[in-house]
Figure 1: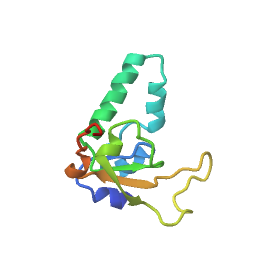
Figure 2: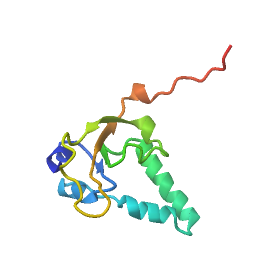
Figure 3: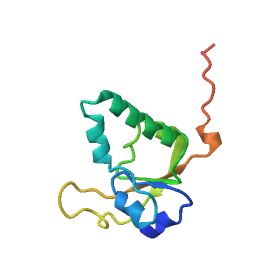
Figure 4: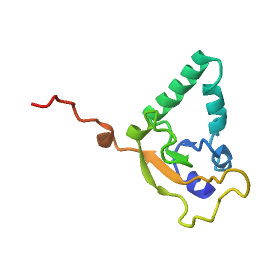
Length: 127
């Protein structure tokens, strides 16, 4: 897993397992649960600013790779339009799974989508 992250030229975003990015020699970012806590805080301006920063980073394809536990984790951002799913990380459903607590593991690998794919077709009213 770490070796695979090292293969990417640039930053990687692993919001649920930042230690993996760090082990691969990449900058770790805030853990997803810390982000959720900040978004749920009683600081709406800070929450809006944080979400805007995350959305902007994904919109400009800041990351060479994004690894998510759930494929729909970032669907409320620019992510679905700017990244494409490359595949799953493990073929065997028994490896790299947590031993206690909520079962989780990095599952999905995404890379920046091609510019042509990101371009949305013009919306014309029906004739």
